[in-house]
Amino acid sequence: MEDMDMTLEAVLELEASTVARRPRTDRDLDLLEALRLHEPAAAECLVATYGERAYRLATSITGNGQDAEEVVQDACWSVIRNIDTFRGDASFGSWFYRIVANAAYQKLRGRQSRSRDVSWDEVLPRFDEQGRHVVPMADWSPRVNDHSAQIALREALTSAIDELPDLYRTVLVLRDVEGLSNLEIAEALGLSVPIVKSRVHRARLFLRKQLGDAMTMLEATTATPGDS
Image (cartoon, rainbow, N blue to C red):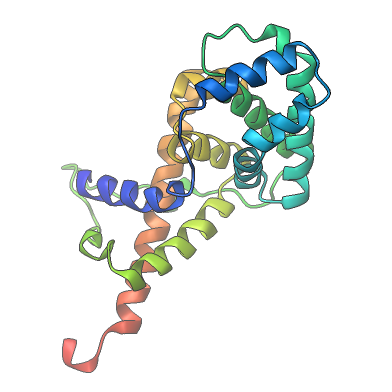
């Protein structure tokens, strides 16, 4: 199981690799001052500094470009209106992304709930009375760095994330793509830490199963008669 967790982490890193995490301390100081002084160009500066990543985060959560645009716009206006509540306990960027995440999650809750939910009986590994796996889990970790496998895994990962129920997808994106802590996620979404931990764990199990199935299919389609 530990090897499979490491493999899943490597695949998720493919998804997270596009997210820039460069410190913006100096820029944030200027931006904060502009926002607090209500300078006309402050909103434009906020969007230029954080808009791209905020949109990517909102899209990952909502799964819809138009909804993501509305989320980012709402979040920016919320920051402008409530800038005096920012106390500097966390970085300004982290504070802003939590607002974006909350707005995206609230957007999801405002939509009709998904008709399909994840069946955890299908996701969780099966054990016998001695605690051993009933069905062996294929170890596809050696192929995670193969280019053709990476393409298949990325497609399977995107599809699997989209299939997750709203809350599960939200906490997974925030934890494993954006790198927020369980406590930060709980505070952003108004949840308890145990609920966040549980949802992240189950979402990872679902992804592991879906990626394992994808690799099994890839192995089957690339196998030659001489391999059997």
